[in-house]
Image (cartoon, rainbow, N blue to C red; front, top):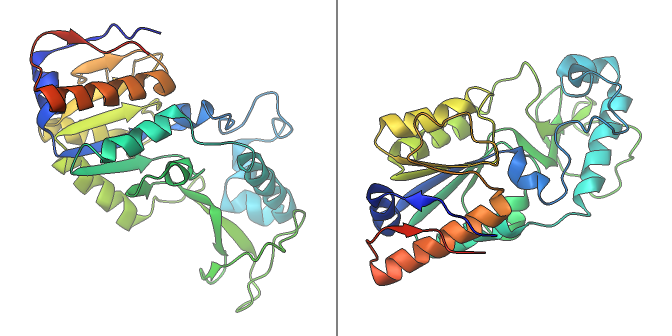
Length: 263
């Protein structure tokens, strides 16, 4: 596959010199690993409304059903692996002083690939906590797929550590994401529609603070007006090519008009 996007002198210069890069990732990057999007329209759970499976109200109304859905999602993740896009971001850490990944995904594929600085805006599927007292719950592997455990401290129902509909993002995590956006010299937007706020505001914040914005999306629409470069390809091909190009720029100091290398 040849990525024929021509990079402007401004973008090449930033990529060659930037020491602070932030990356916002969404469902598109994980879909290439085989992770279903929020609800597969042909899947087992398609007959339920999202609010029935991903809200406190839905959980309290039918905790068994919600717990079973999340256990199903966890089992799906056991069969998938990070893809070339995840691994490319790990390689980027070896080229740039600071790389911070801000992800809307809950699968922890970035961490499994080896990325060190990951901000999870929507929580993750590995952890759990008590819905009543908020204490973390450590699953020793004995949790029943059918019934949510009870908190050993207060007896409350244990829930997944993901952000549900109607719940705010973790304040400390989003504050760190905003700081990363404001500090970034280059801000990558990868595999996200940028339609869910407040996460969708981060590229705009970065742009207003002077960052160079690069969008990677097969159907680039959301931030096209502020993007300095748009790579209309899947992350699994575009990100490795981009990181390879960054390595070349830094090794050679290349400044002439270039296109991304073939992959």
